[in-house]
Image (cartoon, rainbow, N blue to C red; front, side):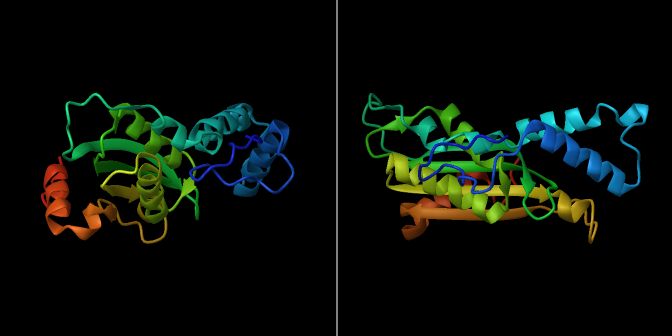
Length: 210
C-alpha cells in the first residue's frame, strides 16, 4: 500500500510520509490485537494480520487509481442524443475516515452530454475508485460529480448517494435502519429546477428508491 497514484485532479493525495512496508502493516495489526486484549500468537489469530493487510489492500485500492482515466474514452456516434443519461443504484462499499467503519450504500449519477458519452460501466468504476479510499459521504459525493464534470464537460451533472454508516449503527448511538442522503448538482442540474426534478424522478429519491 506504499505506492501512490499519479497526480491529477481526481487522483488520491500523494503521501508525504516515508513508505510503509508490508511488515510494518503486519506488525501494526498484531499491536492492535494485543491492545484489544487478545494474543496474536494464538492459533485462531496467527493468520489474522495477513488477512487484515490483504483486506486493506482491496478496500483502499482507490489510492492507486486515477478516476479521470476511466472517463477518457468517449463515444460521439450517438445519433445526436443530447438528453439526460442516468445510471442508478450503483452499489458501493467505503470506509469512514473518522472510525474506519463501513459505509454501505448506493450512488445515482445523471448527466446531460454535450455531443459525447461515456460507457456506463466507467461511471461505476469512478464511484468504486473514490469509494475505495477513506471518506466522508459528503466528500465522496462531490468528488464523483466534480470528476465527471471536469472530464466530460457536460451541460450538467447530478450525483445522489444514499448510505448507511457503521460508525453510527455499530457504535456510539447504535441507531440501525437509518441512512444518510447527500447530493451534488452542477450546471443545469443546479440551475434548472426542471432538470433537477427530472433526475430525482428517474432515481425515485422521493419514493425511497427501490
